[in-house]
Image (cartoon, rainbow, N blue to C red):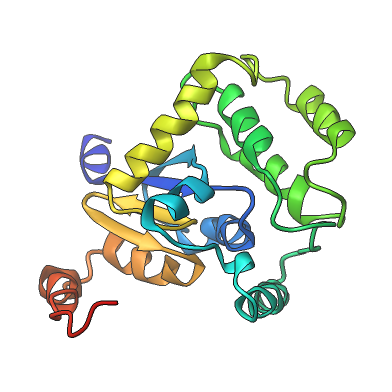
Amino acid sequence: MADQEAIMKTITCYLDFISPYAYLAFESLPHSLMGLSHRMVYKPVLFAAMLKHHGQLGPAEVAGKREWAYRQVVWQAKQLGVRLDMPQAHPFNPLALLRLAIACSAEGEPNRYVCDTLFKHVWQGGAAADDPQRLQNLTQQLSPQRSVDAPEVKDQLKANTQEAIARGVFGVPTFCVDDKVFWGLDALPMMRAYLDGDAWFDSAWDAAASVRSGIKR
């Protein structure tokens, strides 16, 4: 047991329920990490605050990219065998969902059941994710340990977001292991390789990111 605990890695998953890619990655995690000894920590963050920090628009705010993203996630869900129904409107304000997730844990780290319930609230059924009655029903279902309006809950969401930015996170979903940052659904195989001890990361990880910037706009 001691040896097993010594090699157990902690994976921090930064997520926002507004992201369909975060939902698909969340659904794919059990298969991707099968057989690995690990500790998973889920940390809700406000994706919009990250975009603002980096001076960017979200995929759903860019014409052309918006339509492509929706088509792609519906296709990817089909390929993965995951049910995905686009909500009535997107993007929407996810603050209530993020605060609810944090309020469900005394430490501000929601468990997988809570995250699963919140993701399915958004991405299954095709209803409005921010409908007040649905949010009220969801809150009753999850029975949070703290009030979603408590100052410490709001502060925890801000702290999570700032922590993520400080670790080099720029989008969701992002998985941080040691000093490595893995972004997106399609990064899951890469993260698995790192956790399996792939020697590629000993040299190529840093070398691949050392290309000089040729032009800045």
